Amino acid sequence: MEINDYLVVIETSLNMKLTEEQKAFIRDAPLHNVFSMSVAGSGKTTTAVLAVNAATDVFKIKPEKINVMSFTNASTSDIKYRYEKFRKQLGVSIKNVNFRTLDSMIYAIANEYMGVVGMKKSSKINIMQKDDLFKLREDIINKFLEDKTGEDLSDDSSGFIMSKIMKCLTELNTKFRYTEEEIATSQTFIELQGSIELSVDTINEIRQIEYRCMKIISNIAQEYLAILAYEILKTNSKVGKYYKELYEFMIVDEVQDMSSIQLLILNEIANRIVAIGDVNQQIYNFR
Image (cartoon, rainbow, N blue to C red; front, side):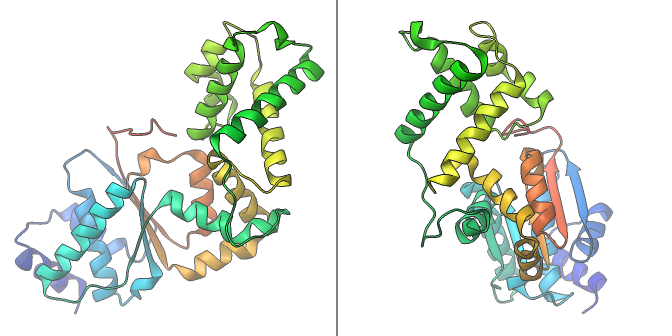
């Protein structure tokens, strides 16, 4: 069946009227890199799901070669639900397309290939508990500030300054902020300057020490998994090549929530990317 005939089948079977822009997206997405930003309620996610259907039914891409990702379990489940619903309405079998969160993909890379960057390989990557992260971070901050800047937090009996530094580090890591501009404009970094003057370089040095220590003990905090995955991909190009061969193309929903490090990871593992997002919605404030 030709793609234009398939579009007629979609409109008839699903009782919907596609715009010319939606038709163009469904034609192009299975075969090209596509970046689509639109307002909420424009049907972009529905159109992406229809493009997945066209990929397997018209362009004969194997369903296991398609990887559909979003940022939360809820949104990923919603996309999968729509896909299965449309398949039933079209009267065709549900294909084995991959639906997952972007974080689960990052975890899979880190878990499978941690040995690439010198970490002790085990059956499952060790994720550092919050209490252990707190202790490690506290020790590093105290020693680093004393050795490098001459700052002594021994007078900080209430832990006020330490808590502010930790809050800043946690926000920067969980929101994947790494550039000088991203750090300097972070609210917790700005607030920190009122208690202790730490430069962007100092904050990043502390983060680098944390990360190196975690790799040495093979115990990584959740907030460093993306950095670990990216280091793996840059250290061994075969890992990225494996994923590019594993998936013929990837669809990423809610791309407006993607951070720079996540974009870099996708660039290393995606053969073709279909990125869709909302120009007016920032769930994670451009992490």
